[in-house]
Length: 156
Image 1: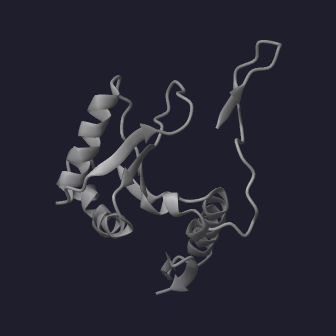
Image 2: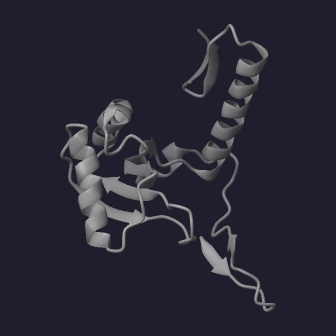
Image 3: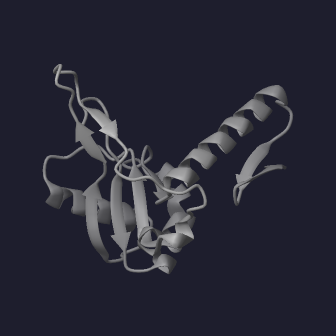
């Protein structure tokens, strides 16, 4: 993302760094297929401790994969934690970690940390819209249980 400031001294605003076509999916971006997004990890002062923290999270899941890079995404803002993007060695490793991601809920240290694959802008918007639909369905039909599986809403 690119940060720009207005000449009036207004706070910086985030501008999109790129435009994507609506058809663009994760399969079209092989570099995203190996990225793990980590949400809820508190901001630390040193980047070296960020890598150690990511390693601790993965060890909590019983995984010890090597990752090629580990960085914060976005602009640092007071009162908000930025997500962490860790690039792993393979897609299979990412799949194994995401399958075990629920186990972090039981961890006393990382119960508020969430793992997700790196999604394109369109995928994030589509997922958000689907989750809003699920919330509305759950509110309208409290006796039914709705879940999202492979991007499709299912009533279980």
